[in-house]
Length: 282
Picture 1 (cartoon, rainbow, N blue to C red):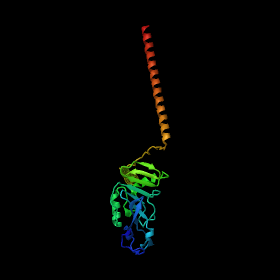
Picture 2 (cartoon, rainbow, N blue to C red):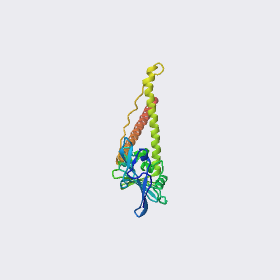
Picture 3 (cartoon, one colour):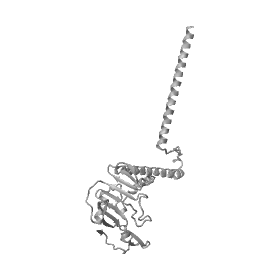
Picture 4 (spheres, rainbow, N blue to C red):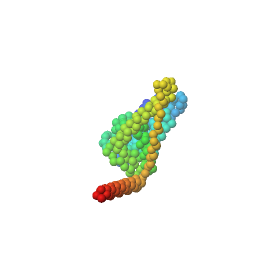
């Protein structure tokens, strides 16, 4: 059974580009590994005249599958859903074209497209996931997560859940929902500190390039010392173990040398004391 929401007829021209921003869906009953499921499709458009903002709906056969909804999980296929961008309909997370959210719920499946979109939105944490109308998947603030995980060559599925052990299993990277939320907060703190640093740099530029020139007697140019360079080196587990053993050996040798030097100083002091006492007796 298929149902569709929206008053725009297929093939009809749309006079306003704002209309295409209102997400519309199609719902289709299905089974996933023997489980009942509902497949949610996103209605898409193609421009007839971008300058005049005239659009036309694509045929239903070309609508992309946005999500497969099951009782205990949602399988997402994130895409860029803004028709006004060049990335429209392209995968949102690079090689990670499938994102699975396992909430362990046992909810009834929706039967109406609009209800299905609302159902998905309610089950997904808004601090981590985009809404169906925005193409689902992770929010933009978490882009660095999938970008860095792309370094794992065989991985192309991201599975997120509650109380999930972080691991790599074949092509799937498993990560807990709370870990993603912690990363989001850490990213936001970094962004805030970055903005503060930029503001201080900008203030310094105005101070040095303007204030010191219009009133040099009151405002003196600040001489800034460049911070020392820091060398960052990546090393494998074997290299780390080898380096730590070398550091321990070096520390032991240093302690032994200091002990030997200390013992020699004590012996020299004893010899000097004995010789002085002998000379005084004579």
